[in-house]
Length: 119
Image 1 (cartoon, rainbow, N blue to C red):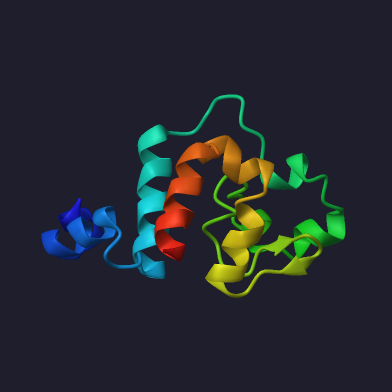
Image 2: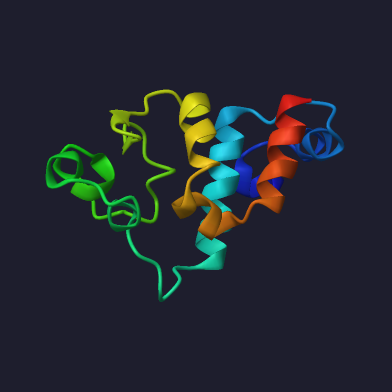
């Protein structure tokens, strides 16, 4: 895990034990790797369909531009709740409540990550 995240084994151990907060870049990388490990669900629909976004909103959103409707949580500047989500911490507060995100990661695992992060 440390090699995949580009950090030390000691750092990973301290994240796991709750001694250190998980840095944003590590959290982002872990979520991406978990998503890639899980693979794309055959019944998954893109975020713009799930959220019923208007054509105008879709066209202004980077997730639509790159046809990455299942990675909307990973892409900066996506339009969620009608406005661009610019900072990772604000974006993740929105994403953790979103059906697209919870469908990929579930809610139990996310609560554990956010509890460690906020500890």
